[in-house]
Length: 255
Image (cartoon, rainbow, N blue to C red; front, side, top):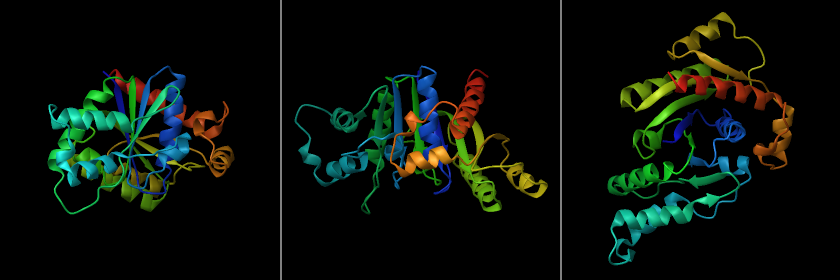
């Protein structure tokens, strides 16, 4: 059974950077093969991992919706979709990737989304771990298109707005009754202790702060040069912080 970690946060909080560094930490801990799923319509994770994407699941979904008769005779729609998804998997050393892409058009996608969920559930079993980079609205989790996750990490900036966004995300998790094992809160670009007022704002999420990631010039340089964050040097401040957070997530895995 693969270990599934979903990441959520408002755009611009650095959740894709966190997701990439989390993949780096998992690979260092021998969680291979690893599957990275970019479920944010504003796709950034492939760039952070240095992976080139040619086709998204959204593209395949639109293809299936527009031309349902394209399915070859003799196989079910589920088998056909599974074959299409396998085509869309980008393979790399130790890590594969699937990009969900945008959902276009006004039509109902319930049946296709159910097929996606079933196929991704089966695909996920082939991996030691699955990292899912979601948007703040948790669209793919709310549709159950990514199935069960053992850990949900909410990434936020250490600001009042960041705290209130994290509160709304957790309210959404609870209202949707998502099938999540443990929830974690991570503060990104956090270079000092929180004052009492800000700490109180984050307390309203109902989950403690698992870790704080400092601003890191090395990460900024790597991103500006469009280099894979999997290759950042050992001892990089942000990478070390994410590794410590990952250790805490893995500790909770056994409880």
